[in-house]
Length: 331
Image 1 (tube, rainbow, N blue to C red):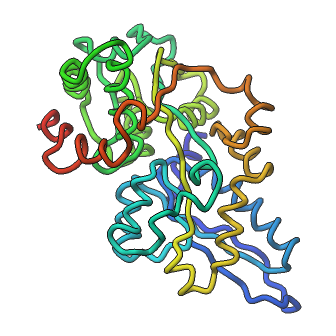
Image 2: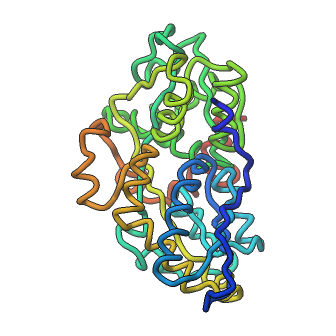
Image 3: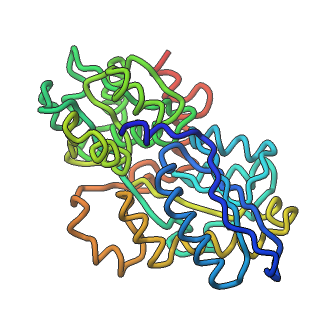
């Protein structure tokens, strides 16, 4: 059953062509991060059905998945996505900064700063939690092996790094103590996969590590498929991981897909789209749906990148730019 987690990085969901349609068939490419494969398989099918009923137009949606930062750079460098869906705003900002593919104020075009869903970093451990891992402090103990995606290529990895750093700050620590803590944590990391799904494979299939740090939706997907082999540990504090989305204006205009691409991103904020997100353990941002499923998601002390790090721009420059804190730690 775990093979469901390892579907290829590119898949297509196809509609049925009818010669009586008044619209030509349309194809969208959504470039997304690593652990949204299963979500978009269901979401895209729902949108295709919705759009067909509304307009009579048949839409094919292609997906590309990988480490979020790597995916974003590919679009900025010319991969012609109509839509980009990431797990951090900087991986969409660079489409403006590098290539002017979108407007600078892209986050103002949709509700909740264009983030339809969010998640958080939690721990996945072996069945029965044999190493008794209960909170962040347990991850830096000698003899503990932790699997984390590479923060240089993966938004998932960035969030894990920042969650550990922020945990120390929230516990009345200072920057020096946080750096020491995260240094000890990454000394316990045996391998850095480029994305969250690669880290999942390392932990779950290759049996490397005592704990996997990844998004809540990913650990619940693993539990759903292989529940008798793993347990989920919720730390005392963690980070809010927001999942923004945007039309890639320049490419959508070139492909003449602007209208359907805009409808597609807006569908993420519909009740139907939010319900699919909940089914895949993504926390909804629409208040009515969040209220309906409030008991499904564990209440945590969640902090944001803005609160602890002064925003993504500052966090990126300080921690993840070449020569930044992560490079100093990991060398």
